[in-house]
Image (cartoon, rainbow, N blue to C red):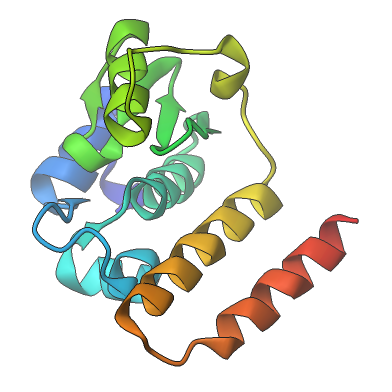
Length: 160
């Protein structure tokens, strides 16, 4: 995908990842564990905001674009070439008001946005959050998922 990115804007990524490749949010089965497993996300072209953001980050980095993670509570975005984007919703460019609305949708209550939520986080934070999502997805289905807790513990130990 990175080889097909032509340009240096968020639109360059969107054209390849969201439009050409068809990656977007799984609105039909949001809590399915496959939405947190990158190989399954690539197969199904559907995922969670965070897993889709990881695709954007990695494709962007390989294409030479600055793509940073944005860990909002209840939703995950990216800064792609300086533009706030929502990979879950087709890579649309959004502003701070829309980001505040996404937090409200995820957590309830009025739209709100703490500017600290827009600060990039290290890769270990992303991995831990993805594993937490996966743990909750498996638990919600009553499926065996002890290996997820083991992975999460390893990531947390590595952060300490």
